[in-house]
Length: 322
Image (cartoon, rainbow, N blue to C red; front, side):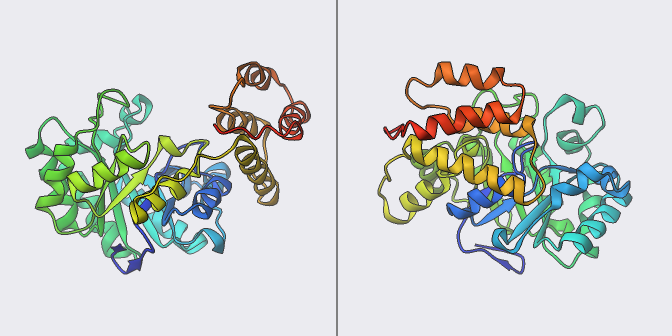
């Protein structure tokens, strides 16, 4: 799949997710077959202010390329300035505009999915960004109440110069409840000429194939299903290429991923107890008889105690199939 001048080696993409898609996690997803990874959602206003925490979201390395950095904002001036700061510092292969975040704190600031009600603002943002960047621009949206309304936004984005459109098939009010509307995604793909990437309810091999076949989209974006499970990219790629199901990871392999994540956090200066505690819970999800251990993980107050539990799990050589 190609997005503008950027050629990808496949069509499976890691979604931008706050507090999830940092550099170490993106590297794990890339290792398992993600063709493109996106950074966490990055506030354009914070970038302009050179907020240190925000700027770490662009940390990158050659092993994860190509990289897309997603910007959030509603002011075209700030978005353009932040895009130039980001591209100068980190040289991402793509920039994405968040037009789909459903969180109330984002909506009240008239960002994310709130902009879907303002097509002229979207037009200005996309035109100015696409006209001033040397890298392809993508946009990520949610669907609106009707296909007609959603198509209006999709056409505005295409005409304004975006190189691809990512469509999450839920409305802002749905948040993450209900079902992703594949009919709306299919309708958008049929009506615009730039690549369309489907997002929402892609949780395993069969749902991935169904979404691709039904919508005829160019690619798939995987979000929540990858949390604690970067191996999903290998499973999806193998199934879509060969029609065969790979065996799930063993618990031992999942723990190996956790410790690889830990090592990368140390290497890139992104090591923190809070983050590692959350990731320990994620990476142990689904293991047999793991509930008491997960309770203990949640009770830990420091890194030493947390890593002691995780090393204990690995040393006990838990190798059954999840």
